[in-house]
Image 1 (cartoon, rainbow over the protein chains, first blue to last red):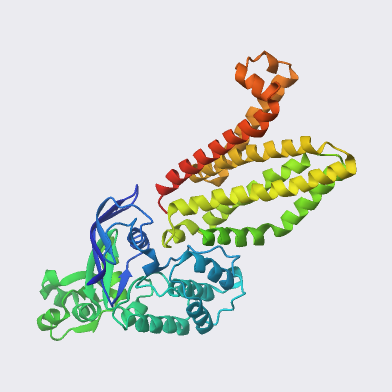
Image 2: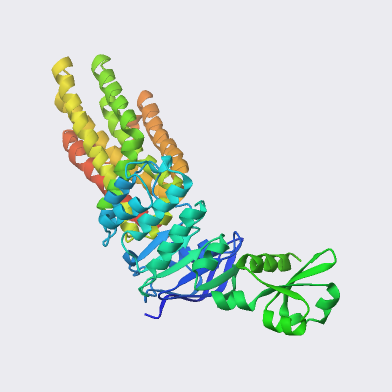
Length: 284
Length: 218
């Protein structure tokens, strides 16, 4: 299977928001970072992938299946930001429940994950810290060894050490090239560490999906005077911020900008920079 | 399906086991010490509400969205709630039967008469909670609870008022119903026809609730 997820022309309309012609691909054996501002449509897209909402147009192929009613959900693991088991359950009880719900549930793997994440199996979810709860959700999503992992803000609330551990786990998880991850996160630095490609959703539309290295290499933040900026081809300028006598401009081709303005400073653009410049451009 | 039943059992047990014990003791004491036989029937009513409150808990934890990611069908999710209601009413019936026995032993109340009343109340509750589940899936638990309670209060209020005013008899029931529920065959009417009707209502509600839930988005 070439792609774990292949979305073409996805549309979903609500009264106050629409997803429009979204194309998104998660190649098998990769991690795709899904970024966008709050309300951009990330969660809506993730819900559409596992069939929690109906779509108004387009196609979604998940693990080779195009019919959400026939999707083998035992092959996917999902962590949603705010939906899970009720907080008066314990990991031990969740294990008992999931043994009956998930055909491939592996109690030994679940116990190992709980141990790795230092989660007591008799502790109520409500007595866990935010970080512990998130780790517990991850453990629950991983214990049946799914082929596809869908994570919605799964690293939010985790301290840097634990986030690092989770990211390491995800790297290991895709090592055999048969597992795939689609991960939405506001912590873009995490995605820069683990994602193979980045998909940027803005106001219900996909601005781009690019290979991470290519993206970080291609975009740049140009710092120069307004006069210098005038010289630059407008097609290279994504958005500009004026700070005193200098301008900061996100350029869509750092190499071309460097050739046009050899004396100007062009820094590497992070995913966060790219998002902020795009947001600023739309605000203008 | 078993997993869904386990989930609700663990959650409801944690939430209500103390309340359940208190209600059981209180109602039993009231029935036995204060000669309030009808308290025996209240237990069926209460047990259904425990299960309905599971829907509120599900909403709170956005369980339905999470469940949509699991290999369980929407039919199974709805089915688990209906099975739980049935189990809760069965358990309350067993407890009620024991209390009826105690009442007979201690107070000399007619066992069969109480048992038949308990039997009828349990089936009315079955239909009541079936309708409640349908409305809960359609409009949400809070609105449904109020709507069903008001509807039930209106129906029973009207019957009570008509009875008080001696007007009930003036409503001409079809002959068959007269015979079944008020005449010589009343025992068959209340013990067989009414339960069968309640079960049919319950099964119909089950089918409608499944249809409503299948169309839902989370």
